[in-house]
Image 1: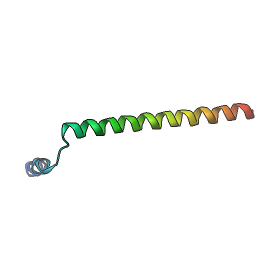
Image 2: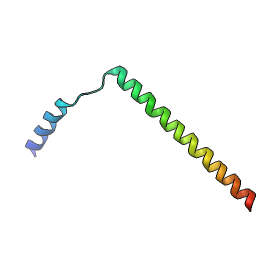
Image 3: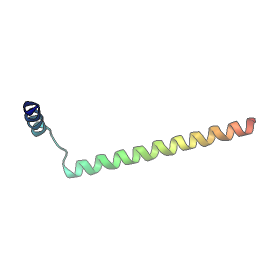
Image 4: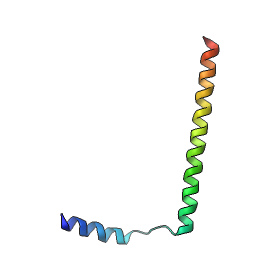
Length: 56
């Protein structure tokens, strides 16, 4: 178990962590993507609901 934790620590030190400005940029991209996908599926859902209501 201790060997595993030492290996994890060693590997974490090798990781190339993003700089602050990169982190901010990627966070904004992720948030905008999530918002876009949420709006897209909301519009699709409302459209399908509207079509189904018109049929019945």
